[in-house]
Length: 205
Ligand code: HEM
Image (tube, rainbow, N blue to C red; front, side):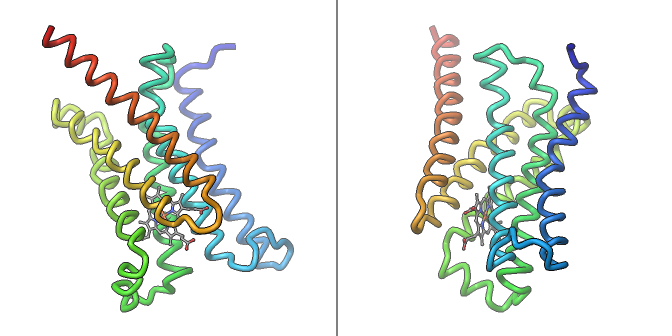
């Protein structure tokens, strides 16, 4: 059975809310004392969960072009926008979870926190850069910005690189996940660099 673009859009839309449904039901069950899935520090667990899903969606968004270009999976391209929007959504929840559960809305503490934990600044920069991409992700903005749209959306490379640095700077005991995410991000970025270099060579020769 071959699904239509609209059916696939619907599926991607549903798949994207599943992590949210999972974390919301976990929070509800922890509140009712039924389940202890979030461990001794639920606020931290929620921040980690949303950050990880933000990164998963970023990686998925970045993987669409190489999968389409090098492996012929062109059917994925119409779903890139939704994956990118989910990345921005989960990263925003992640920042919100940090402000609510770890900072406790103590804005006065933010300056000291940023100095003590430089990865916060890197994460915040990555999130801020995502915002113009969310705003201009529509077809009408694409038409309005023309060639500049593509340039602007190349910011995704910087965003993913900053997200990897944000994760690497937090390495304490367990290095496997941050290093694995960084290697995947680096591979996807290297594929882009290789493709751009190849295109440039073809144009000049
Ligand atoms: C594109 C942007 C971002 C991405 C992809 C991202 C991703 C991540 C990931 C994957 C983790 C580690 C999760 C784990 O260990 O299981 C993490 C941790 C964290 N992030 Fe982010 N993040 C981003 C932006 C931000 C922002 C804007 C803030 C706050 C203003 C933030 C605050 C934190 C904090 C507090 C932690 C937990 C550190 C700890 O364990 O003490 N992040 N992030």
